[in-house]
Length: 179
Image (cartoon, rainbow, N blue to C red):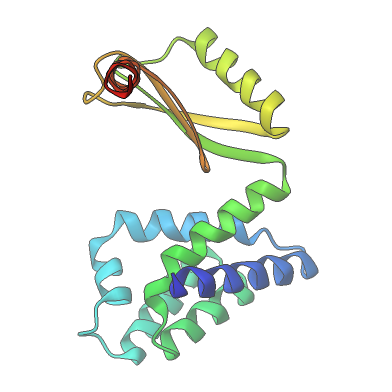
């Protein structure tokens, strides 16, 4: 919980600095995340304790140059390495992306179902419903969930719409046992 609070403070500060200097830090951090995710070696160097702070910074500086990261992003991550807080970088990045999406009026979520793909018309109806209900533009990703018997689950932040057969059977069971 404490790490999440700290990550939110860093994220808010980064976004404010990015705004002041007209830099899209969220985009930079997404590129950095993609690079880290593609390279186990880079991930190991940055996040494992077996490497010295100097080794971590040297590798990161080279990556920052190749990705053409801004000085704000580069110095922030070097600071996290120096302060031995690099482990919260993924949380900071997640918070930056969430805050940036929120500022732009977007909201991200998932639709879970049993099929390999979702019907685009059905997805558009769900997005229209959520836009009306939440007042923001939803961006929903579809995820196949073989643990569902049938139906769909929609999760957007702390809102969950569960129209799955499993949920309906559970509610039916509760109504019978409750009487």
